[in-house]
Image (cartoon, rainbow, N blue to C red; front, side):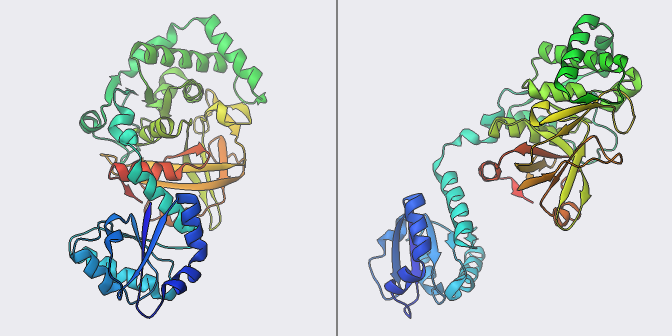
Length: 414
């Protein structure tokens, strides 16, 4: 990695080296960076041709940058400025100059640690192969849609033709009647075994009866059979129709399928299913699809009635929140680091991602069964810029991987 540092003639190279010694040390130690400092009075600026980043060390360098750019010496438009010595002011003028001349640029700004995070991310994007492009990740994927999206999801659909043409994803439309018939013929003994295993691994069973457990287990086995027959990598279901037709829920089925490697979402929400699929393909993590439910200036609580059992420290077998029927999962998730993601738009052209720490597994009868609170204020995003209701939670800190994916595929950050 090569960093070109430009300064005004009012300052010396030694001043810059002393002023930015800590950042230069981090760049060299963590990125093996080669750092070249130049000023207006200097000649021999050939190093500029190979710069990956231009660090603006002081104000008064706007014309120096303009001369380098206009003579073709510079090829990067990524600037670094921590704000000291009028560096940010100069960077803003330079960014405006680039924009007026039809060039996109950006400024990496903040503390040394924040700058290093962005520099590493940019470097990864520049040097790594295209193995994380959307088309490569999803090529050959088959998604099953069990019924249409739920009626209340008025902004969560996708362009299925675009999914196939750009991502190489085949969408398989499955009549819910096929599933309903399949549930009726599931072997009782197989369903009993599934139900017994669930009870063994759960802390307790609250509302569901033995009959409820068997019906939920049959739903799981019937969905799994169709997934195998159709060779599905992922599926989503218009689940409330199953509640009405079969007096049971698919919450348990989705929890178990996600643990078995079949990405499974509810309510027919295709944008969220694609987010869950991305979590598996890109980060190798199962995903909890949840509703933002309680927002404060310091925290955000999300909740839903299904969660991969493998993401929970313990579980309680519950009924479905809205209907009071069937089987749902109340899970306690570890108080650890997570990444919250939402990929949205009919052509999946925008995305939100943030990392947060879980601080509580609360419980209230006013929300879906699994509830988890994070130490982050998402009100500014959710109340003004949200790209949908459901958001996806995965274990660990994966925001940088997601941002690299976004930049590779021209996805706008929200």
